[in-house]
Amino acid sequence: MNDYTWLVPLPVVLPLTGAGLALALWRHGRAQRVITLVALTLTLVASCLLLVLADSGPLVVDVGGWSSPVGISLVADRLSSLMLAISSAVTLAVLVYSLAQGFADGDEETPVAIYHPSYLVLAAGVAIAFLAGDLFNLYVGFEVLLAASYVLITLTGTAERVRSGTIYIVVALLSSVIFLLAIGLTYSATGTVNMAQLAQRLPDIDPGVSLVLQLLLLLAFGIKAAIFPLSAWLPDSYPTAPAPVTAVFAGLLTKVGVYAIIRIQTLLFPEGRADDLLMWAALATMVVGILGAVAQNDIKRLLSFTLVSHIGFMIFGIALSSEAGVAAAIFYVVHHITVQTTLFLVAGLIERRGGTTSLDQLGGLAKIAPVLAILFFVPAMNLAGIPPFSGFLGKTGLLQAGVTSGTPLAYALVAGGVVTSLLTLYALVKAWNKAFWQTAPADVPVVRLPRAMVGSAGALVLLGISLTVVAGPLYAYTERASHDLRARIYIEAVLPEGGRGSGVSDDVAGEETQGEETQ
Image (cartoon, rainbow, N blue to C red; front, side, top):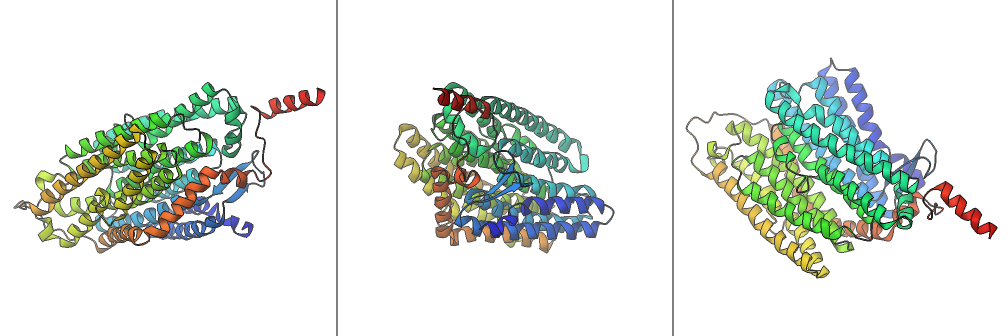
């Protein structure tokens, strides 16, 4: 296994190297495109290899040769490898879509010199967050991807994009400040920020202090994941960005926050003291988000609200604190990354073909562009949870885990999940009827959709279908990942010699040992 640990840093190194080269060649648009495409393709290959290798046990790299907990550890276990693989596939598909859009528009919507380095830095930041073995480098990963996202969300500098980008930046900075505060307090209380060592030391500190640290971390990650009532920023920020940017944001950025919640809840705070709070937040996120979606008359805003709503399903699975619940949540994250990204790409195609995303101004697209109708219909039904798609399987797993839990709050969430699924179906069918079936406006221009844009969106539709085809092996993989998280295999991999499990810090532990020897 150690022979393959060199693969672990590649999802970070490859995009960062590509970003540097793309920035150096900012005058050469074609070279930038080739570099970005090659870097993300190699990243996908490396991530898929890690996905296979991590199934035999976590792969750990101590950066610079400094072993944990002193040095920086990059850890590829089943959870992080699965997240890396699906995020790499999505970023590559969105890149192809954006390249095709750039060719069609003469790069007016995606300035090459700015876009490609920023996009690669974003991919690297996501990988850092997934692989980080300590809280500080998890923070670094968030900041790297957020710095790139600040650039991407304000591309072309229109007044609307700057306004929405400002909201996004202010909220992101607020969550980062809270996260940094939580890291400082955690180090003050435990003497470490290494997550494996924290898992050993947090049970030994004052329970009240531990709860405060947990709530601060959940608050920071809850903002990033757009959990209600910390989600109002998302529907105002995402829809104004270019279609590829909106798609990759919708697919990945909130899921990095969900990933962080899974990691801290299973590794650092497995006792479940905040589970009831998370369940209430999950219920509110599902219901409020989908009610917002039903009220929308613009496809992008509708999809933004469904994005918020379905984050609630993932938080529901995490809050159950059971292997079945966490496994279903991981499966649903993978499904949702794929489907939500696909729908936003298709929304970009609808806007290009119909000239708008307003449902009142669209119509007749099923006759005018039947391929586009199929590209929207399949992921829409998948998101709504219609059998036999992966959305149905993921929701069924979550509802079964909730029923197995058997608590009144879990049953309330099961009911909320069913209602949310029905309202999701209603909202998407309404969008389908207005955009594709109602009478087309008389002045709809004839616009040919670039084949590469349609092809990349179609590839993601096929990826979503393939999740249904391989649902058995994939769900088994998420169950093994959930078991690893509950069995604390992560700690054994990062600290093979056991680390230091007692005491608040090394100095305190040393004083306790010296006192025992004196006695």
